[in-house]
Image (cartoon, rainbow, N blue to C red; front, top):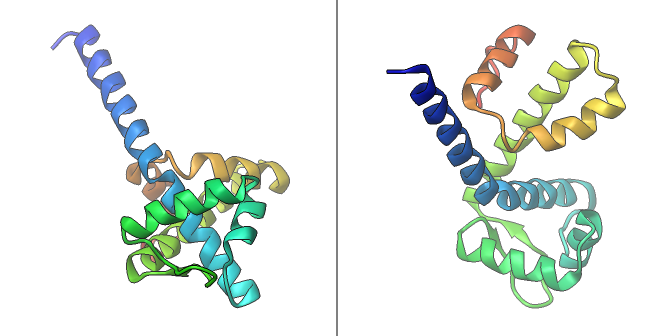
Length: 145
């Protein structure tokens, strides 16, 4: 295979991976936030989810309904948002992944304030291979992801 064809395949794979991660991004953000709110406040309300994500109540409600159809969240009118088993599993994975990325960025000298911001952006687009390399570098081999 030519170098040109190899580059095109790599680029195509990268675009496909990015599109796939965008599809899961809101599920990851919402499940992680719902888990955090339940841990911190005992419940997750739509108004608080919207406030923390910096979006309108209507936008949050629409996304919550979609994620409910997809099996990540459960809620009823005027009730808190809850995680399903599928949503709780995703939230745990996201928290661990975020922690690995954050620790890695800090370990290579990124100031914590910037590492926290960057980890939030990187976490949705990182490959399993890169995440495993970060864990290996940090000697976190026993941390299951």
